Length: 258
Image (tube, rainbow, N blue to C red; front, side, top):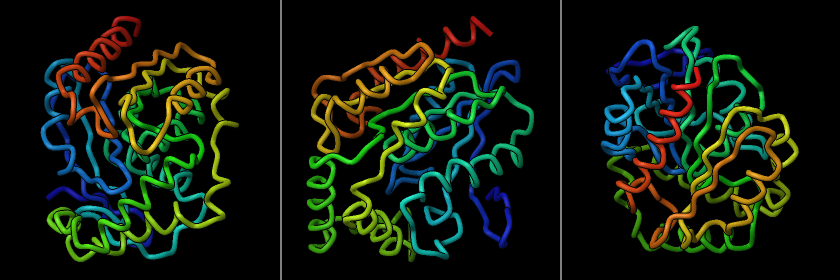
């Protein structure tokens, strides 16, 4: 298994997907309870369609990577975006251009990182990203927390092993804590100048269309929004063919311009 060791002897598990070395890497950033394996074969399919190489990795606390060492703060997504992610990119694909593909928490992390304006970043795709906390988000997480208490989410153990309860509670407890209701990253959107593709399911139980509209309206570059019908919080698994087409068209246009 390939691992990248960063400071404090943390090990990050990653998977590389082969592709055309002249094309940008697609950097897949998983959701708040996700990991490499939970992407299933979607990264391979998107890379195959576009010809791009890909990088999929488990953030610290998830999957096969090192367990969390500290309690999360309101800045936990900033930590992943501005500390861990640059180390992953520099350690695995230094000096390579790339496009972010982020789902849920991964989408928010992608936006935070995009605001740093790296010259190697060519574009950003978000699925079900959050930029502020909504009542509907809290209600969705409350339902997930209740399902966890009833043992209905034990399937996550397959992916996170002995870290499962720790990572689930880190996610649910953080979002359900009163102080996290003030989390908001709208302020950084005007710093984003790369093209954006903003995707969300029309029936997303964790966020309203306001998330999509505000990302598009407040960023400074080209922003394309897509609401996917008959789809909840996981567009790439619920409507894979539609989402593959949307993402590949966007990526191919970026490649043509670069």
